[in-house]
Length: 377
Image (cartoon, rainbow, N blue to C red; front, side, top):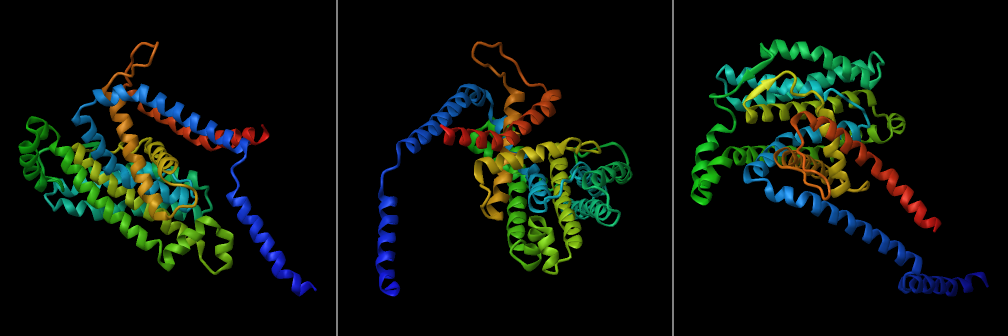
């Protein structure tokens, strides 16, 4: 009897599932969905009212400059993503590895060597600083944040010795962007006239940094699909389980932190050659910008269960959006309804960034509270 009744029970259960799937949504579900869409529309309307006039007032120089800097800084966002998301390793070494890349660029360029050598040199020195942090954490059992602070403190002197002075100008020397300046300028002048001449440096930086970023993302995507890359991701996801599977998590933590800071070093070399100077303090507070880019990218372009490739692209786009927001607010007045117009000063950038990062970090908690409130009602 039991065997004979199974097909009927299966059929009835499948019919019930199909009927439930075809049934119209309940009224509470419709109401909750409507509330979410209303909230999104209100937020979108506020952003259009606040940012729309600012975006229109910003000229081509602001937008192309923000794009160029965003692409140059994107590898910093990728590096921060590797330590904070892939490895789950809070790391502040970014404040040391970024100026290290700029220092290597200044030394190589001022010594009349090929500026393209600055990228692998910056990769190596930034990676060494990451190794120092990882070894201090693993071998000496120092907290990761304290280990990175010690590395940043020591790296200031190292970067100063490498660079030779606190600030090295890179004007009037060949950089990785120099061979492309004249062809791009001539083409843009043909298309856009004087505006093309004004933005040609930004366009060249965007093209070169975009090419470097694409190569880095493709290589990282392929790397994270290898056995070593999977072991690295496993170390960050569950270190105890990884050790149970025979993975030496100590090696992968050191290697992951080194990879992260090596990429940040390359970003430092790209930015220094675009801005025309290398400064030993250029990495101060950069970790906040990196976190902002990671959070913006994840909120807008990637979910918790998306692939590593999508996350790498998302955090890069997050850095571009972050730099664009900074560039627009620095160049135009913020004119809010019923309030006097004001403009963000360069000295206010870090405070504004900290506020934005804190707000974005609070988004998941607010979302959870809102959903629990909807379920309760």
